[in-house]
Image 1 (spheres, rainbow, N blue to C red):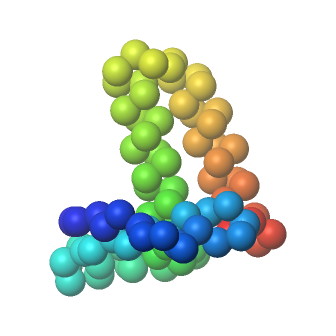
Image 2 (image 1 turned 45 degrees about the horizontal axis):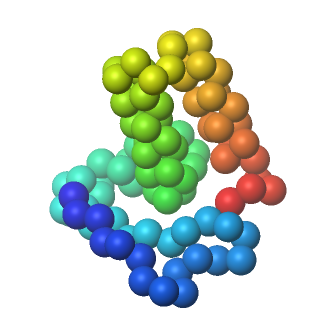
Image 3 (image 1 turned 45 degrees about the vertical axis):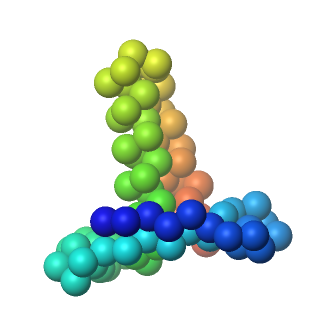
Length: 86
């Protein structure tokens, strides 16, 4: 998986950044299957996975505790899955 840095005008007015991510065909198929199974778009699945990875890393490196990680991830997933957001 390779991540390209966004260029100049890639930031929409609502404050989210546009980011290109490249997947091999088997990786993309895996993401699509799982996102469909969860009833979300592939983009939403990737966003949630990225945030989850961030908080797992915070916990592993001792920058937060498990309760904070669990609470944040639950709140973030609920907000992101709200049709009014994203």
